[in-house]
Image (cartoon, rainbow, N blue to C red; front, top):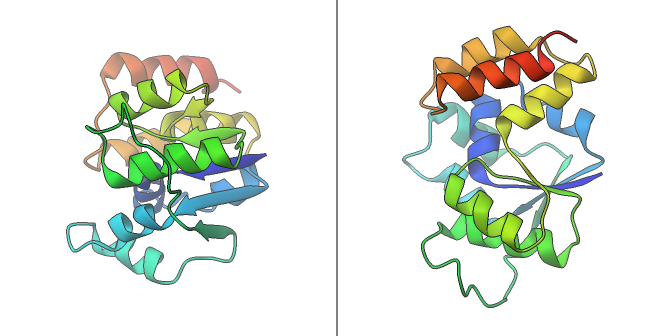
Length: 159
């Protein structure tokens, strides 16, 4: 299964110590150069910059696609590039957390999930304990409603 990742899911998986779930859940993880630039930006957490400066072999960095970004003007460069890359590579899934980017991607026919979906799927496969992972996520700047976190735990947590 081929996944294209935006910066947010990668960042939070690094911060909670679960980034190695991605190569266990996906056969390929593609990342556009614009996303790598965001991960290396001075505003990114030090742990994320360190990880992105020495990417593991399972991360495949791709050129930013040169396609029309009509309808994506309000999205960040990494989100735009990830959506375009997922579309041109016919990825099985795109990893996005921002609501506006998720809407645009879904509107372009892409299957969308985010960090909670990745954690839930990994829990289903027995790769991670979901409740402690979500507890670690709560200690970061990740924003999700308590209802969404509860729904995720209810859906995936008892497996």
